[in-house]
Length: 178
Image (cartoon, rainbow, N blue to C red; front, top):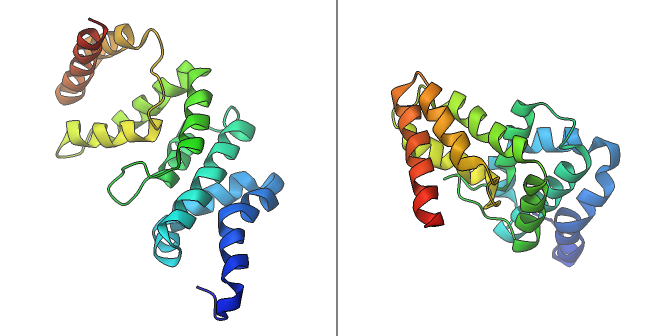
C-alpha cells in the first residue's frame, strides 16, 4: 500500500493498467514470477486490482507468447487468475480473451486437462482436484471433439479414478448435447 494517500490513484493505475503495458518482452518472466508470488500479491492489493492485473497479464501473455511456451508453463500461468480455492476471479473482458485463445487452440485446451491429470493422479480426491484443474480453462468452450477425446482417455487411462473422471466428463457432455 502507498505511504502517501495522495498517490493512491497512481498506485492503483500502475497495478491495474500500467504494469501490463510496461512489461514488453519481459511479460513471460513477469507471469512466471506472478505464479510464484500470487498469494503475496493477493494480500498486498485490493481484490479488484489483483484480479485486473492478473487478467490483463494473463490474456496478453497467452495472446503474445502462449503458442511458444511449454505445457507446464501454460498450466502454471493459468493459475494467476484463480483465488486461493482455485475459483476464477477475472473480469469478463479477460475471461473472454482467454476463451477465444483456447477456442482456436483445441489441443492446448486438452493439454491443460492432461497436465492437470498428471498433477491430480496422486491426490487423495482426484475428482475434486480435476474440477479445480478445469477452472484453469476459464469457461472456454470445449473443442468439438472433446466428448470422444474424453472417452478415448477413459479407455486408455490406467489410473482408475482418472479414467472415471474422463468417463463422467464424456457422459455429462452427451447429456448436455441431448
